[in-house]
Length: 153
Image (cartoon, rainbow, N blue to C red; front, side):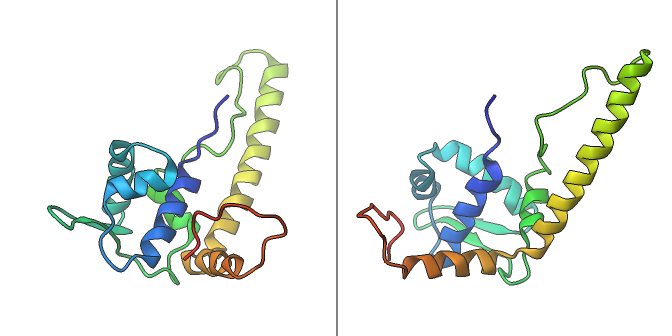
């Protein structure tokens, strides 16, 4: 089963945009993710609709952050992505006639709803600015072993 990494990828891109002084082309953002510019444009279009980014066409064009990082939560970004499913768990049947399966469905549904509430509540407390602060603090921590830091300034 593959994981949905869109939230992680988009947060990565938004942090790049926070540090950018000029509009950042899709090709450059795609390079940061080892992805395709078309995939980046499609994803960023949803963020543009939510007011998180803007785009500029033509030479020197690209993407810019349009939101306040101190006010934009990770929940805002998650919702801009269409609130993707958080869990791969699901019921075998949505309308079972078997009483055992009804009991299983109720228990799983309640448990997953509780877990989703906890996750979304946590995402609501985290801002893009806090995430960027964590990144910048990590830039100044000496590495224990030689590693490639592709995000060094």
